[in-house]
Image (cartoon, rainbow, N blue to C red):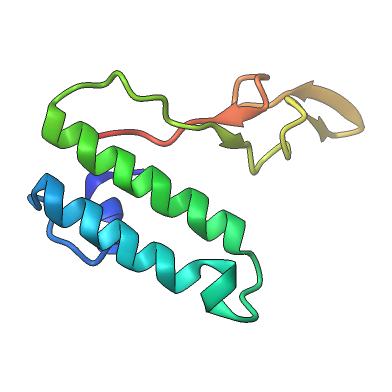
Amino acid sequence: MLVEEAARMLQLTPDAGKENILAAYRRELKAVHPDTAGQMTNPSRAIMRLKEARDVLLARIENTQSITIPARRCPLCNGLGYAKRAHAYTKCERCNGEGSVYDAIV
């Protein structure tokens, strides 16, 4: 996830401070939480994305890459690490056979 995308998710500017990031994260988390959101289709995915956005913005502030960015299943091979091409299974080009892809931090 890019810094700009993370800031957009939390409705912030990319240069927001730590207090603003945490306040926006709590505000957006309340909006998607299952107890308050009602009939949301997939609140756990939304919560995971909000946490990732918070972590990306906080890492930018702390100027460190020590946080762990969660991997997501490769959309090309669906996490298998291989894909069927012309009646044969080959290593997935996107995840290089690992089955997971990582979002970049910029």
